[in-house]
Length: 299
Image (cartoon, rainbow, N blue to C red):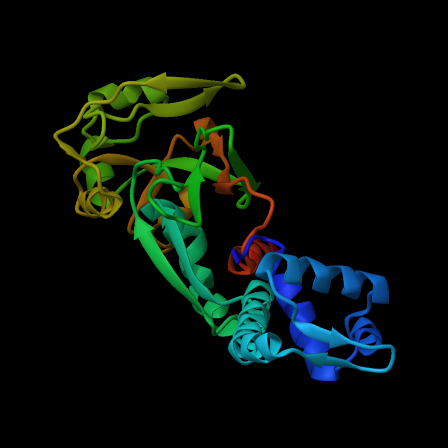
């Protein structure tokens, strides 16, 4: 006898009838009609090619073949029921490892301040965080979700807006500004050392975007320092290497304590932060509670 998608239900009916020694009692226990129980047993006996129950008007008992079958099947049915119950509990309970990919700036601006609070709120969820500058194919690379700023996503991805009011900031150390002065308009940056982000994927330098009369305008910059790592760029700016281009929240602490000075603020464009995940009907609970937690604490 082969077990198909209906097989487990038939075996469940068989074990129930054997346990209670009756079709009517089994129907009551399973919440179905007596005729449905009888039909299931006939189907199982047809598949098995042997009678499993002796039936009289007053009693139902296992045949010799039914007894042998019951001793083998009953423990398996019980174990499978337990496995399904455990699976349902896992599906309903936020637990397991949540794999995330995000840029360093997204981590610093949004996730890092909330990390310990989330872990405290959900002690059975583990976080596996990959910091990468490139936009990752979360399906092929095995991630549950990604967080990026202003990313262009594939059509089968769902984006959840998170941060608001994020703006770009051109910054430099007081020492650099003292030596080289302050640009009055974005074009003046061509006369300054600019610390530039260089893509590890394309090898090109990121253009700096400014808002001019309501429109975003990109400009080329020049400089002697470039890197694909945000911390390297930040260290270079703090050490007087030139002007750098960051999300304002990423450098907020340094602006507050005066280690960096912001310029060209009137031209700063606004950016958006989003969490994205693969579109599917059944979202894991660990991801659902993570999204709800981030949205609850966004500012």
